Length: 167
Image 1 (cartoon, rainbow, N blue to C red):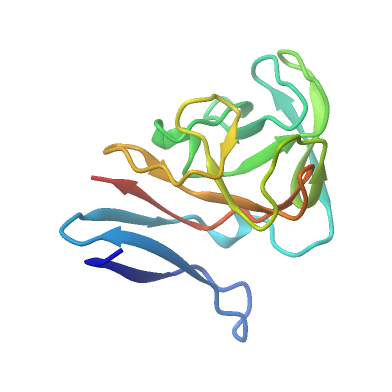
Image 2: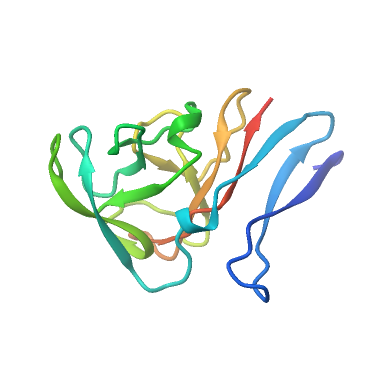
């Protein structure tokens, strides 16, 4: 759109030769706060990686979760900074409170419906544990990329190390 500008926000590099840039669309005249997540807390690449963690509430298959200060996983939502800033994972199966399950941190995750192939997906601001292909734009919402749809049912997980808050 006329008047829009694009700002490249450098992310943490995983190797000296590997520079990652996340483009953040910033509407002219609007300020955004930018943050980075340590490289050890995000998955990259196409190989699937899972990690056993403890559910802090009932979780459904493919719920997007964050590691809370209690050491348990809760549903992520971009309206809350604590659920966006650290480790994000996807539930591979249904889990109940205090149950240890495997959670996926990278690779291709199947089992979705209605994804738009090629679209970027973000932490949802309205649905706890959900993802959206609509860039969160309301003041106070946090924006973090979680992956890219490779088909209507599969998401290539890319947990961006950079995120920002709309002001």
